[in-house]
Image 1 (tube, helix red, strand yellow):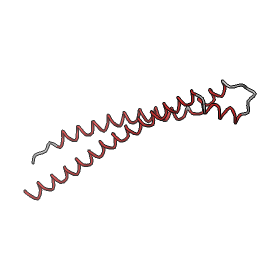
Image 2 (cartoon, rainbow, N blue to C red):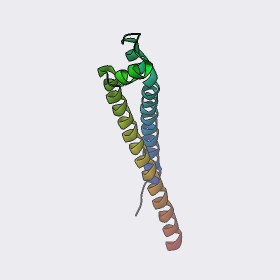
Image 3 (cartoon, rainbow, N blue to C red):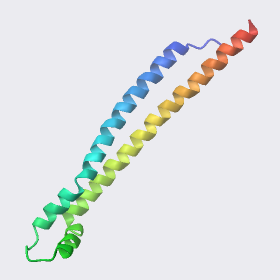
Image 4 (cartoon, rainbow, N blue to C red):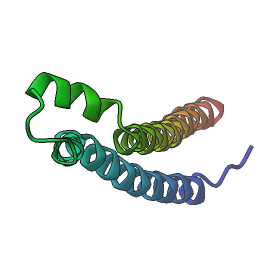
Length: 113
């Protein structure tokens, strides 16, 4: 069994890098969307009459179409972040499996020789 571990390691490391960058980008988008929560609520509250009580404005803002749309978009960003993380973790697991296989191959060759 003659496996080209050097090329396989290069390939897996490149996949980890690309998946890591994608995960980082999606995590940043998700974080930014989550941080906008109060800005969105505030914008929705500004649209309401000024004489309403704060609690009522807050409830109406959370029920608004704009806030619902924000929640939908944020949920999608979080979903994409989680998928990117799963792909990144899969590549890391592939690297570990390859590392173990390489170690086993090395030990087997030492025993045979």
